[in-house]
Image 1 (cartoon, protein in one colour):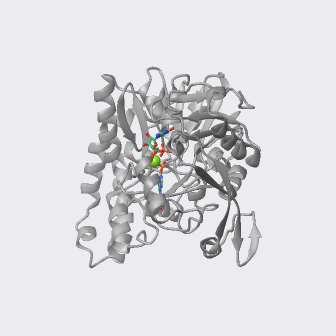
Image 2 (cartoon, rainbow, N blue to C red):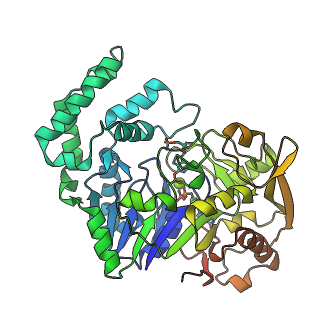
Image 3 (tube, rainbow, N blue to C red):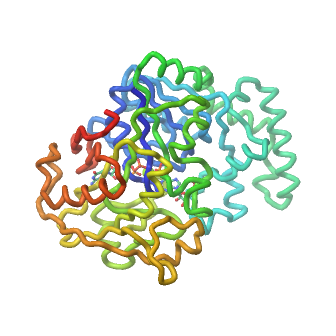
Length: 425
Ligand code: GDP
Ligand code: IMO
Ligand code: MG
């Protein structure tokens, strides 16, 4: 069985928790997009991790963790992250790094700051945009280049030549040298060199044997470079529609696709957010939900659930089931609101606007749902949830036409209700 775990909002939906929960039954867990902009919280035997590039499979023996070619990989971050996991586990998890995955170079981070282009977007400043830009411009450095020092240095020289002509006044850029960069890269990469290989073939063979393969999405549908709230997006495809390309398998069929969404909405960084709650209510959600970024520590903007945006995400991710997280955070709210439509220039619309300027003008049209008071974090059966909580979940499920597969009622793996309703089970 192949399963994909996909974000339905602006990231941070709880993909890390869900992937970690499912990874114990997998043979392979594959991260397929983004890089260290992601921060996935995993609680492994009581220890909390913020993972950035290593998929959640690493926490289980016998599970291979694949970093697929749709990713951009920062080797120094990888080394640090891997070291922490090795220390926690007392063993070295098996990694497979796609040969054609691109690498984030020190100058990508420098460029993001020098250009200031990420400021309005509020990027994570991890060099994501410049690294994907180099990939598209055909001047990137790939994992496979690490296997041949002279080829690596030749590519770095060509890239630095362009870079230093463009930034003669930037000291940090001018002092870079191809041999120095190659030294640093190879130092970080040394322990990973045997892990660089043919990831598409390995994924294909594991799937053909009928063994469990789990695809761990990063970010969320609304941050997709093409279909998100452009330009306030990340620089990769974040959705199921982009998965086959990101792993390099044309005939990819993932039977079970879990669309992960919080029971409300959050967003880090800039960009329109129609259901955002400014003021006390938003601050309340931020505190109750501990809504602070895993990668940057920035406070997350908070608001009510947006079904218009989730409809858009449903088309892109084609979920066979929903994983609704953080339902426990809504406990105690008397009247919960959900947005079913927007008002744009006096007209009611239910299609998610492509124009960011239009989206910024959209006023949410809310429907109220009665809340519940009882603590739900100890519940493990769907039927035991308060009827008001089930009614709320039912609004989401029936509106999107997708069954609810998982309800998460706390950050720990145990704090989970597996409903068994997923059509693809
Ligand atoms: P990801 O990027 O999608 O993996 O999500 P993050 O890890 O960035 O953010 C999700 C946050 O919510 C983390 O702090 C999780 O520990 C926490 N979390 C996940 N599910 C639940 C839940 O059901 N209830 C509560 N209270 N916290 C949760
Ligand atoms: P996970 O996987 C939330 C946001 C940034 C910024 C925009 C572009 O943990 O859900 P980038 O650094 O990618 O160029 O920034 O995307 N962003 C995320 N927001 N969760 C993430 O990852 C994110 N990765 C990027 O805040 O608005
Ligand atoms: Mg996150």
